[in-house]
Image (tube, rainbow, N blue to C red; front, side):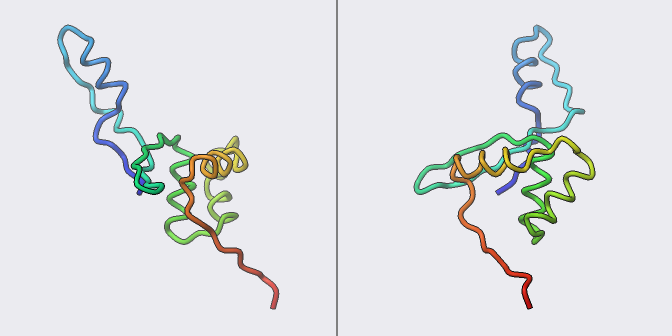
Length: 102
């Protein structure tokens, strides 16, 4: 599940340590992926490009289509690093390989 929190964790920490305890929520929340390998529940913080990539995959884009969509806005997007991170974390449950051959 992809989720955006209501508030940014760093903003909450800053407000807790400040004397006036005012919270500026204009920056939006943190992006994260919540997943369940086995009986565990894990939360994986996500960068904006990573969020966009995973959202594209969840809405039916192919791997190359999702990467191309993210690269339009984030030229330094590193597909290999993202895939490696998610395979190591166990956040991908599987994938299918399709052939373009007639």
